[in-house]
Length: 482
Image 1 (cartoon, rainbow, N blue to C red):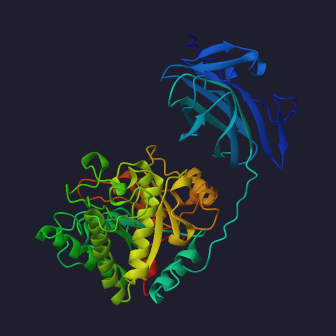
Image 2 (cartoon, rainbow, N blue to C red):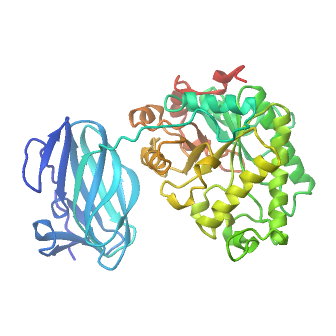
């Protein structure tokens, strides 16, 4: 096993050669870098005529790493291709560019499009490490990203009967998308907000203390609105605070945004995580995938949907619009609404939309599909949502714009939807959002209360910088908005 480390190979951008070439086109560099000429450790050097230059690196250890150095003539987005060999089937590999990590799939022997990444002008570091082991890397090839998918977003919400306030909210989101980011915060604990003044909520105050300003978007949860314990006084008190604070947020010009951690509608548990309950969507379906409308489980599902619909209708009567993100993080399968896979999820999402909008008359909602950036099979249908969003807890804490996910969501929806960051740890830096063409509609750190401390994931200097930037919308900017 070869554990030696070779010096980084820096390839000139001034010459044109044959297959191991770098050319200059429109001031961008195009390059092919051989794995065996990069810095590597805990890899095995393989000699085989199938690979370019007759060599490749085999990764059989978890601590294997290959590090390439690439010099870019100009900052911008580049496509990274990897020549690789999966050996014994498909494998997952990690690709890290200047500290920003992602994954790609190593299939059979050949070249795969691994990532579109932002490169700095000058030197850039690209590392490949195993997700799964037992695969080979032959080379990487880097070229300017020439794919420029344009946004083609409709100016109206998907609900043709949207209320005046919902249309105003959607217009605000549409007008600012790509130019400014709306600041947000998720709320958790409700026990210390007796006056239902949103500015007195400890999660709001945490951002104010860090930045001197309040966020414009406030997240709330219907998690205690349905389930076995919905009749308990604590749950009812929590849900009432949620509704009162959402209304106060709107009256101050802010935007209430709802998530629903839907507690087990089978009533066997009060859980929402797959690990904690056996709830399956398909248990309320017939063999042909249609709903079994005579089943007790279907009745419970419908009851819960109607209960949440009534909460939204209560806001609608007050002239209040909101954002609603049902069935979030489904493809991760850690919530019961994702355990059965894509098709049952889609059926349930469409049932929620149809029951709320078509039957109950909820028309004050801007609808969000919360997706992973590779969730092609999980799309509930363009006519069922206005916004696609992602949840990213950036472990590098580097205030990355998370442009790779942004770009993938754009591709996933054909550029037809507004894109938002609906959960996050550290906030993305606004300069990087703009520079890397990933200006999210909004971001929303998870709560500070309940010992979440997600506001603390961003440093005070970064809070002050971003909340003080004219391209970040705060509650102060929303005065008299609605």
